[in-house]
Length: 482
Image 1 (cartoon, one colour):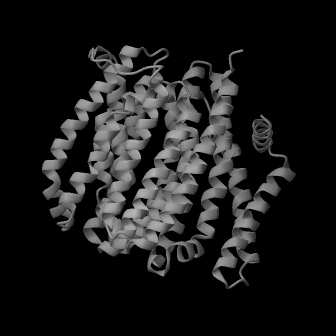
Image 2 (cartoon, one colour):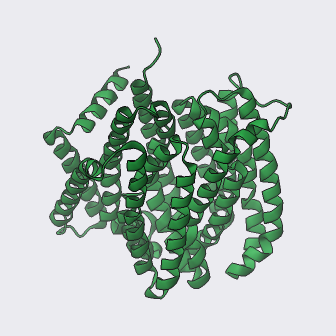
Image 3 (cartoon, rainbow, N blue to C red):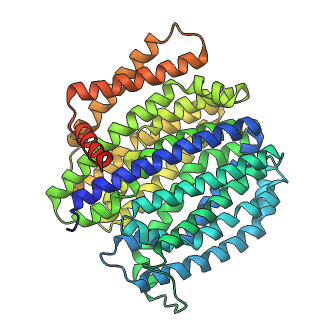
């Protein structure tokens, strides 16, 4: 018997939570080991290249992954065209970046970046060989298989990174970790999709032309998103010390890992589900609001909880040399609690084929971000992070304006879905913070705040009989029994 859309969505969310939860736990473990073995300067060097790697990766994929998912019934020819286009684009981009390596090193005044960048950029070339396969897996909601690929990638690359760091390879261990992760994940994608679809030597770029109008706007927007996500490191790398940039990169990494747990869970199912209900306004509103409630239920406790324990976590897990990262991470986490909501809004817009809205919302957002940063950088890194976070929260109002025009979801509907979880979480974290203040031993303080905060939050949801929480528990119980 064929699964219903509701069953597929629930199953996708289950594997999304398992996938992203496991990945983040492993990232925490490997991240702690590497942070203890490496210096802030090592992270600073690799962090300076993030913006170039991200943009190059965006250009090579050219938005065609989203284009494939947005097709009702993509053919083998569609996937094949995207496969060969990605490889061609990646080779061209690598050649340009290889030549530009001395200029990148000169901008940051770090000669070591010449060789480091040329090696690190190999990651997006290797990634090109798996983009079409990833699109196939996402379109067909093969979330269990995606989870296995990512898990193996983290295990192999993380272990290799630690071994290299122990051997004294410093920042090279981080570069090798990135390259190996892509290689292992791609191997898994090929394994799971080979019998279902694999590329042929018959190259026909006609599907690329047909998807171009939609996909090029996704491409521009994805580049803008990458710039937005890395703009602070790009500018900080020029105006602050290498150690400060490294401290920021470490804080930003943990913040990103935390909200990616929620964002990645939704990202695996949001667009396919919204494409399936596009045109059915009432059903679309119900789906969107349910996603908003699910996002708020996970994002608020994860991010506000991490902000509450940021100091204890950084000092215990990474060591006193990363103390500067704690205050930065606390600020970023408060803003990061709202980042996953972008995933819901953006996928709604994309499912309507409005890649133009998707593009312009991000273009204007980046322009304003850069203007704010350049105007306020003299205030120092903490104030800059705070202003950046507040702006990103406020920009959700712009996204909702367009979401309302497309689906009819009102501001008060979303407020009713999100605000209760924010208030519950804020109250729980405030109580947790006050109750644990008398504890001075850092390890005991960290453990007490995690256990008490999680217990109070889950207990509150249970007592209040929050529907989305009860549905999640019911589904989880059934899956565990199976």
